[in-house]
Image 1 (tube, one colour):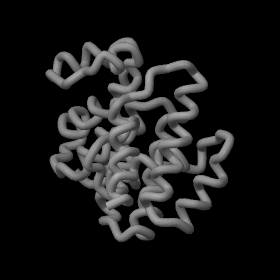
Image 2 (image 1 turned 90 degrees about the vertical axis):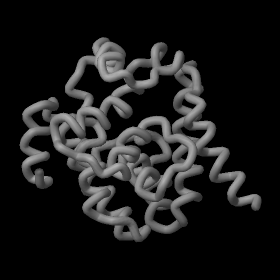
Image 3 (image 1 turned 30 degrees about the horizontal axis):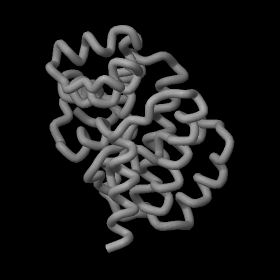
Image 4 (image 1 turned 180 degrees about the horizontal axis):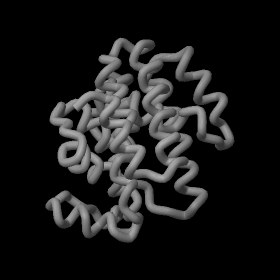
Length: 190
């Protein structure tokens, strides 16, 4: 299936604003892929399909994940919206015929990150945060960093922004986010 066919299916399954967000993430991921030397087609597909599981209502995400025997943490049960990322890998395979493990991993880690993130994983995570439809305090700084600094420096800023947002809401910080952030910091100390 080519990316145009994927776009047609995705558009028919998502609300218009969610579909526009996916196009924004795809375009941003392509720009970041060029900047950081990552395969642009992989970035485009992962960016486009990163929210493909958002076709399901939040209250149905856990059941959809259980049907597919996906691992669900206690934090995921507390905040089921987080499960749209790993569920997205299953939907990308089922509906969009995506079997590229790099693309699937980028979709799976776009919400909370995780250990051993590839450049593609980081690009999709970052593109999801800074795409043109997003608006939050500190976004201009993050967008500027994405165009001027190395990828890991930008990721630390992105994780910091995400963690602060979660803390302000009083939610639990996902251990995958902490692991991803710590891994970058530890690699810099070596």
